[in-house]
Length: 83
Image (tube, rainbow, N blue to C red):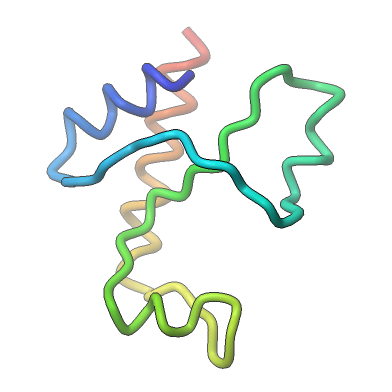
């Protein structure tokens, strides 16, 4: 699945670094442990300096302009990994 994420990013106009990281906080992925051996906590949303200041804080949000590309990424990811 990591390969699919990397391939989709390479094929897109997105410039992003994908690297393994340890997630210390709880996420919704814990609900998927019984249906998948691999859980990737990847969010295809472009964030800027103003967004970073709001992460887990007052007025946390995702820009409306970032939603359509994120949905398109997930749709293509599902197409690629379901083959």
